[in-house]
Image (cartoon, rainbow, N blue to C red; front, side, top):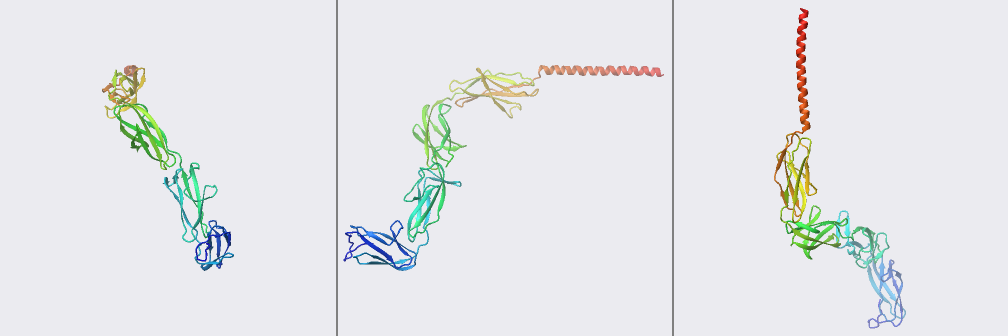
Amino acid sequence: ISLTDIGGSESSATTDVLVNLSTNSPGGEFREHGTGRKITSIIIPAGRSTVYVDYYDTANGTWILTASAQGFETGRAKVNVKPDTTPPEIEIKINDPKHETPSGIYVSGLTPISFSIKDDLSGVMEVRYRIDENSWNSYYSDFNLNAYSEGMHVITYFGIDRAGNKGTEKNITIILDKTPPNVEKVSPTGKLFSNSIVVNFIAKVNDSMSGVKEVELFVDDISQGLMNISRGEYVKKVNLSEGYHEWSIRVMDRVGNFLDFNYSFTLFVDTKNPIIYEISQPSAVFGESAIISCKAYDEDSGIKAVYLFYSTDKGSSWMVFSMTLQGDTYIGSIPPQFIFTEVHYYVEVVDNAGNRFRSSLFKYTVGIPPWLYSIIALSIAVSIYILLAKKLFAKRKTKSDRVLQQVSD
């Protein structure tokens, strides 16, 4: 509503001007601009020429709006009214970073959330929303959930148009993830003995919320790119020189939360095979384990493990056991075997750099124990005694039968 002079130009009021508002529409009313409050008059303040009002009407047709003020010519305007009874269309927009899964939408604390609003008639007056059961907010610009606790949250929202139509409340459940992934174990750290300059970096990373998106490897402050996933672990091989190295991994989840983890190690390259000597050759008998002993030595990286391999089918299949260190000697045992079984065996040693050395093949035949000889000898003696007794009994019986025959005659 504007004040104009006789020439039609806008003219400022020298004092406050009370303007009365009316309409000939049965369903029309004036409302305070921006608030929706019903009014029948409005004041144009001194020094101003214009004020704004909103007009609301539910009656279809062409109507006359009138504005009048004492001492001023009455102003009229014709309006063609098409009633607006449809609430605004509103959709929520979850912007990136986000991760959508069948179980829900994951967002970070910094994920922008906005609304898409449409009303083709009277236009949108307000959008209201709330988080969980908290108080309602008027929507002015993008917001996020950084102030809320990690976990599941419900956003409820609705829109109101300038005709006063209120949309149905809608809601969406989203899962807030504010925590970067966690690193359970890594390798290498401390001293690394290897038979090659190729270092295999390994990291076990997990994230119980949105999941792990990527793991980036840095060695001596230089990015080596993303690590590859293999059997539940992130791995990457890098060629390095011997000596001290610093490395780190940057772990990021699927909504952008990330954290750096720093480590260090010293690389020692050892390409020499370890040595095995003084391998024992047992004299095993039935019912007893065969004890195998040996000594092993590695000058550079040291002994990691010593293994005893044995076969009872001439090498078609092999059994293996770890030998234990007792003093300066490694001890292992082969379980008891049947008499006359031919047992083949050898020893393999591995150093801390992964170098392996295998001994020559040895064999032994399971013998008869002394106690079994005694049992056999006793069995033979008893058998002979029984045989002789049977013969003696038969001889005496024959002689007795002859005597009885003579008496009978």
